[in-house]
Length: 264
Image (cartoon, rainbow, N blue to C red; front, side, top):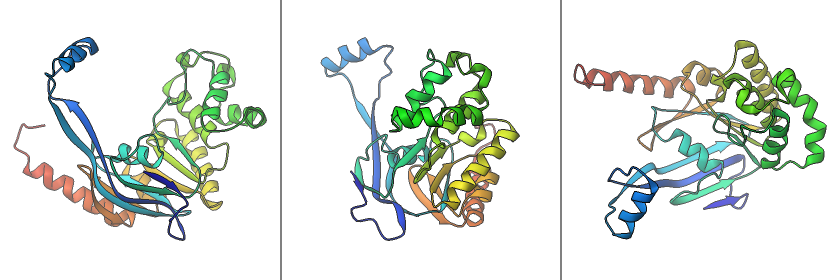
């Protein structure tokens, strides 16, 4: 369930109340959708529940930069998708104050056969911007993304870094109230990262809430005011970046030490 502004605590832009997300998947391996359908109609499918998030509660202060850390599969991206309203929680409530602009996956909202220019209009429209506004921002987006010579080429010809620059340029050409970044800053050269840092600093100065996931703990510690550590879908710790990252690294060392030799 997602509410907007209704009962949000003063000073908070995001509040998660006992959020759980359950995915159901078949225990049997299926080679095709046709096989799945046949077995489903025969009642031969046995489903198992996987709780990607389990009773997570969290409040994010308006204007802060909030980081999320954890191992692969811990539930970080699921958490961001719940906040971005890409998926609805199985249990619990999400309360938001402000428009959410998500940069969750590289290439999300893009079409590979459309040109860079056409994808600007497509992606910006999906973010809720009218064509008149997009036209006004078009040259600024192209300039920031540094894709001048490729702007009328199909997106499938773009490198990963070019796609990242274009996606970031589109999403941040309008002041976001809540900006969500999932590993997007991990792509691109140092010059582009410096431009991203400058724009994020401008957003923060203007009161935007920034929520980011990254495996680069140095980036999280440098940029974030507070950090949450998620493990196996559960909230393990929330606090200052140095405190939470230290606990997270200590847990990794403990797990590695306990793992039998030769085991991945």
